Image (tube, rainbow, N blue to C red; front, side, top):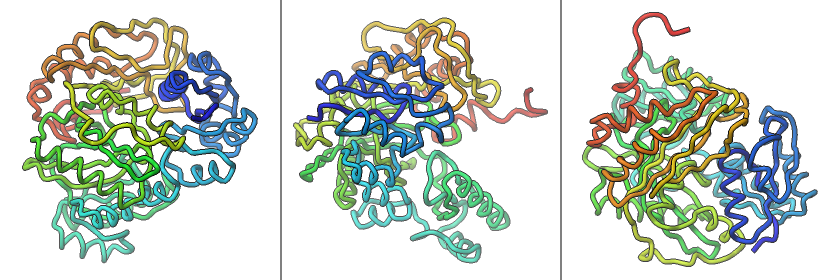
Length: 455
């Protein structure tokens, strides 16, 4: 096991990794920007090193400063968390070249999985179903039109090097294809410095289901079952649950087996997630791999009893997975609500500011993963996640009741939050009866308002 690890991230995930290190007997070194100098997790780290000003380009995205901090702290490994540099193959490669173990997949696997066109080729080799579409990037509007006619409208245009909904456009007819292509390319270039896009069939009103995988360095790969991430707004997840409540057992098993096959063909190591769209007939289609720990990992931990962050560290240290597939058993149901400092009533406008009051829920089956405390200032530079409220109970109905109670207990004052939105969702009959899809939030819960936009 490593004596000392650098945590190259901030906020909730930095605290989560630090806690895992402590329980493994590993020293944890935190990095921070000037905007995070008073963050609570810095006080529980064994050491904290400032790496720059508030903007992420000056700190959490600055590879030379992170490597310098690792050298100064004399660490043996670097955990990237999620976001920032976690899926940057160049960062993973620099870590290795600098003598630090990157706690994540090999840079070659990150590079393969980071380009969705290559990931689809790997999925096809692994005999994992993919959404019908282009075999690679589309290089011209003429080629795009020919492909769209072949697979049929509507089509989805997606950035080849992206994620998070950026560089993504739905096109429902030929007349708007050229315009949609240009908009997607422009957004992809701005977000990822890569304007390449590809086209696939648009699956109308699907559910979004993902499979957690773990792979050690000896080639032993397992899946930790599935999570449903259907509740989204503009491709950003709001609520996750495990297991996916609408999957028949046979489909759940095939999903897990498909994810393991794909990881094996890709030469994958460490934790990762294979994401799928599932249609109304339970047909599933691979869409991408997230080569990192994910925001929603706690629901998997709750239903399997596996600490995924500890497993990440152990795998990076060369330890074998301590369990086989048949030992990973689902127990009960878990739900997670992402609590963000945003105003849902005003188009999810970010709400930075000082936390003036905080009441954290508790009781049986309740978990609160967060880095905030009274007096904490939510900076304007980063993702607006304040914390994750997670519950676990024997059944989905009981988990829903626990989550409603926990949301009623949770109070955060000083900034606007998404707590009221989650309360609405958790009481909506469509969600309670599983009649939702990836467009449901915008289509049913938050339809566009008529008239001028709110100030």
